[in-house]
Amino acid sequence: MSVTPSRRDLLKSAAMAGPALLSAQAVAAPAAGRLAKPAAKAVLAPNSIPVSALPGHFDVDPTIRNLEAGYWSVMPRVVAQAYARHTEEVNRSNSIFARNVLPGEACLANGSREAQVAIARQVGCAPEEIAVARSGSDALQLLIANYRGLKPGDAVIYCDLDYDATIGAMEWLGTHRGARVVKFAMPEPATTANILAAYDEVLKRTPDAKLLLVTQVSNRTGLVTPVREIVAMARARGVDTIVDAAHGIALLDFQLADLDADFVAWSVHKWTSAPLGTGAMYIRKSRLADIDIAYENHNLPADSINARIPPGTVNFAAMLTIPLAVDFHFAIGAAAKERHMRALRNRWVDAVRDLPNVTMAVPDDPARYCTITSFRLKGMDSDEKAKAVQQRLFEKYRILTVWRTGVARGPVIRVTPGLYSTQADVDALAAALRAEHAMFV
Image 1 (spheres, rainbow, N blue to C red):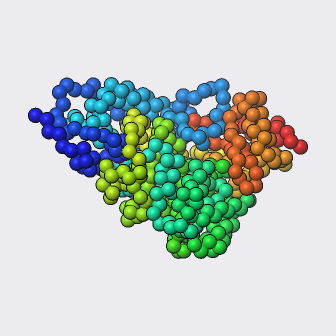
Image 2 (cartoon, rainbow, N blue to C red; image 1 turned 90 degrees about the vertical axis):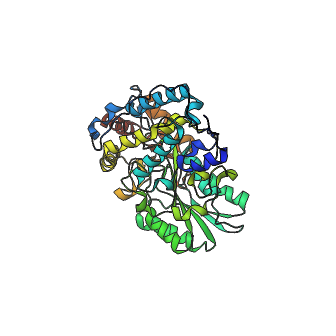
Image 3 (cartoon, helix red, strand yellow; image 1 turned 90 degrees about the horizontal axis):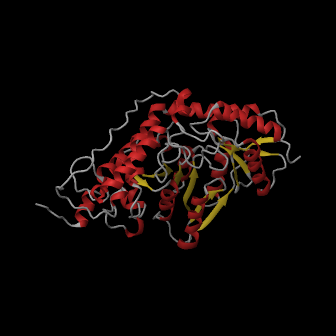
């Protein structure tokens, strides 16, 4: 006999199951018929993949040296195969899966919870402090737009190296919530001392500040900021920080506790190598009430972090694949992964140090860079010239990089090796720069 509880009761009882439940009109009942048996899960043991073997785990276009892994990460083969299986399973099961009518593991509620648990395990926090989002941009914009500690006239602060989507959200606080928006430029060349001095200066001259945006690793230049120290500096002045960790999580070897931040968001489809359309939001449990629920999302209890994610249907298969992507991260090992990616970066940078027309936009201090590193050529003083460098590298050498604008000191060319990259890939870049470094002089 079927029992049909109310939609509100079901959603409340499943509040911790993840954002994919937000639009579900679940029916808790035994089901007639059965689903196809889910495929067996791949098993990836921690520290089982040596970095020397990494390129063999990826299927990439062999005709192009893709040094633009900063957009999103290529899924390793085992993750891509799991994603394909999950896509087939979800498509076959349809609402039988999404409405949670069957007992056991073959349901959306369980899959959502597993994704939260996996991400929490990766970053070292409680699962109830994690919400799965559609992207890092979505998660960051939600944190910024729904921050409750602002009143008209309060100031919010960001810098030139922050991400476009987050800058837009900070500007939105000015146009829609009456905040006074303050922008400053990151010093260049940067050092730990002058980065901290720049944040200290802008906080001192903005005594009415309530919110500060901090980017852990700049998508523009690759600069790594001393987040923990900046967070402490702001907190001492009564200023909250929202941290963009999109290029830090799963690349730098750290845990969220090392940042000591209350609000953090990132893209799971970047360095965790999960499918596209996956992001994560962290809110320290004691600060949950300081971020408003999303779009009056009263389908979930106000004390659930998942109420901070808008209701709607998400890519269920992508969400189901997150735990395996996290397992792949641990199979490499966080410390080994960071060392490997740093070594690939150092290999090409060291090979062009003697070129008088090539300048790196990040310092040599290992604490201030990792994989992403942007450069300028002498005379590359406009967006058009930066585009020309990107085009030359691709059309002549089949090397993909990307030009980035918005940096106070001028446009740059961003180089981002991926987990699939080889020494030959970065050596090819170095050779191309040796041939083309004087293209504007």
